[in-house]
Amino acid sequence: MFYTNKTILITGVAGFIGSYLAKYILENSDHTVTIVGIDNLNDYYDVTLKGTRLTLLKDAAEIPANGTFVFVKGNLADKELVNSVFQEYSPSIVVNLAAQAGVRYSITNPDSYMESNVMGFFNILEACRHSYDDGAKGIEHLVYASSSSVYGANKKVPYSLEDQVDHPVSLYAATKKSNELFAYAYSKLYGIPSTGLRFFTVYGPLGRPDMAYFGFTNKILQGQKIAIFNHGDMYRDFTYIDDIIIGLSNVIQKTPVEDDNGVKYKLYNIGNNKPESLMYFVETLEKCLMEEGIISRPAEKEFLPMQPGDVYQTYADVTDLINDFGFKPSTSLYDGLRKYAKWYKEFYLST
Image 1: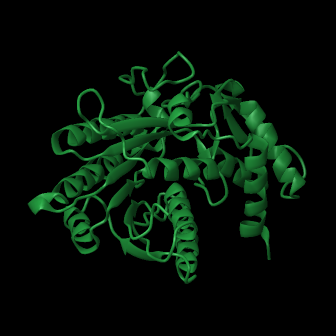
Image 2 (image 1 turned 90 degrees about the vertical axis):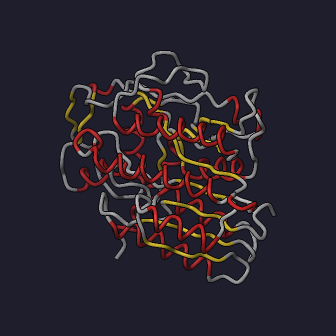
């Protein structure tokens, strides 16, 4: 009953993780919780998918036992809008999941990353700071999305929170690292309790079409070749969306204790703690798609060199997550992709 009588602001609420989190809270709390969601509904990928996610949230909020959902369309770079949302709804918890996603896209479109990931997050931090003005209670906890991308091309695995993350290989990674630095500074200077989450390759139903599993499915259906980078010699710590949401909800409910410097600040890796090879990933995806009758045979493949911004592998050390919450992601790649394939068939191919 942690969420009882709380107002929770979720940015990027029409996004993949944001929509799942909002729905989870609405369905696992009571009628006293209010979710205020902000999203600019940009066209980086299919806006129809974002609309579907919002519809699911509105449907969930119509069930009397569930909480209330309020949607605000807007851009976090609009400081006036952000401030007005804080003033009108006085959120007790803020979960910042809005960001311009995509490692490769950041190489050719840097402006959108600076606007959303840097200025947008700065405006959230400022609004959190001013929520304490004039003796007001202020926010209880700021939780925000970082990324496994901050580890760059680190060779040591698994990636640990103690590792140096000073050598990003993409602008996207640099913006996520900047979020961690800004959050720490605001926690130190203004006493904002904050927790950052380094997500590792999140996938599942209703996911982002720019992700590999989604893009591969579309291309295979269209009879196109799929590109296998670094000639298939890459590894990713694939993390199923349900595991991400349970981890997120656990983190939201636990405000970080002060560290040795008197700062209420914490970071966590959220990953499956089991990197899988790119070739195994492709083979498993093909198997799941064939089991659902979506495709009849494996895809034709084109083996290419590593792309700029990519890294050889990701691998999460989740020791802190286990120690603090007794939880670690555990959904197997086959189980996760099977659920994705079932959803894809129903969403795109059912008549």
